Length: 133
View 1 (cartoon, rainbow, N blue to C red):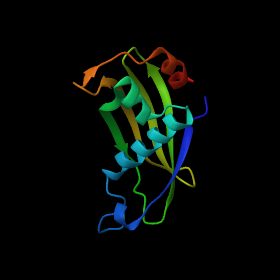
View 2: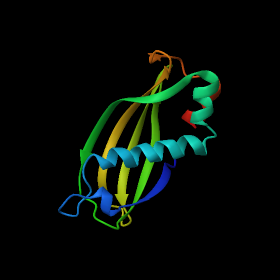
View 3: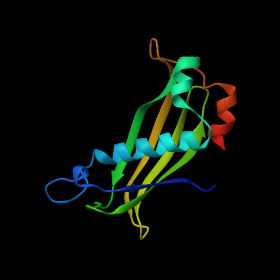
View 4: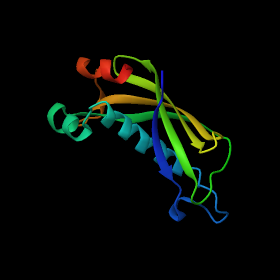
């Protein structure tokens, strides 16, 4: 399976005093890539919230930091679904330099929840096939 790819440029606001991406910003990059991945699958998160009253929240993030990215670097952020369950799914994500070196690698668990009370909800059947594709 080919991973979904999203390009991110490292800006001044992303780096620390040493000019290296601040570690928490990789979570932001991964979030953007997940949102774009969902959009590419035809999942409109705003409509999902308004019509179905549900959405996806990260409930676990396991991240390994390998190599610091620097100001102006172009990073490829990947999303690969690895496990689909009734109310949650696991993804693997990586942030890679243009030369292929891995900056950060993560396993992300996202759960489907009802917005009104944040309780777990089954992922709608019409979405499961798209998410697993």
